[in-house]
Image (cartoon, rainbow, N blue to C red; front, side, top):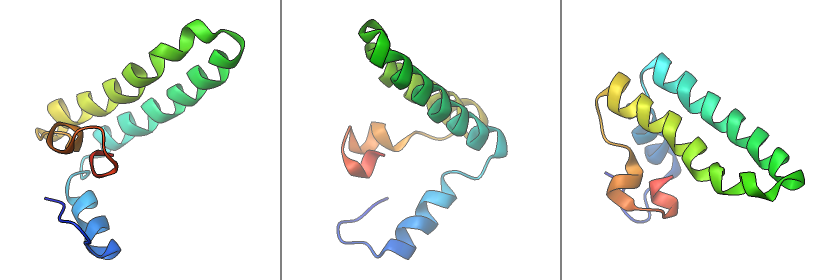
Length: 84
């Protein structure tokens, strides 16, 4: 759980505790890379821009729900910086 004004080192330790599975981490990275491609492609074709959030979150959620068997922070903290 993320508390307000938590020291950065403790925040990183908590993040690492929720990202321990290699497959899930690979899915997170793949989602980020694909999202960057969608963003760049969206510059030429703005109709692709609405696909950024689903592309970003789909890979991370699959990693959390299936491979780590936990709940992503966005479901606890919403779309705030804590949820990222």
